[in-house]
Length: 183
Image (cartoon, rainbow, N blue to C red):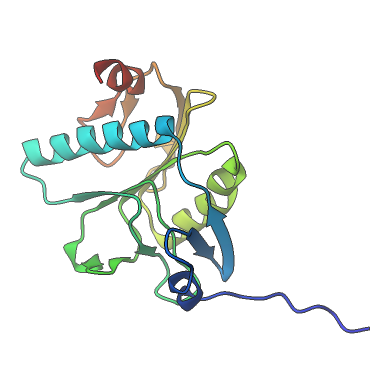
């Protein structure tokens, strides 16, 4: 009896998707993406804005790039992700197509349809690719998991009401509840 062969996808398959259809590619497996809801987009906007203001106020050169923004994590044609927010400090990784290599900081806002992807597959992939810091923001539970891949002691869980310390910027902390009140 012959085994069925699993299909592996490449970045060419991502680019061949119909207009408006979004997907990510992790180790040759394609994961379709549903359109984000209002709460998701509100969090992306507010977090991106506070991070951008912080970097610019200190004369920093890191780029804050909200989705959809292509990240080619592994330098191959089998890994393509669109983190909700990417902070890239090495300008040599950036070109007109996106980011080639790991961003310094990645923030993912979970969606009700696939939180396991952010907590499992992407957590492992971001860590092994060289992301320095990874946040998983869950709007339903109002919990933020922070992973400091450079210094394991920075890995922790917070609520939206906590001042959440940013691992790559020692003098920045973010209270998500305050961001949502201000808008």
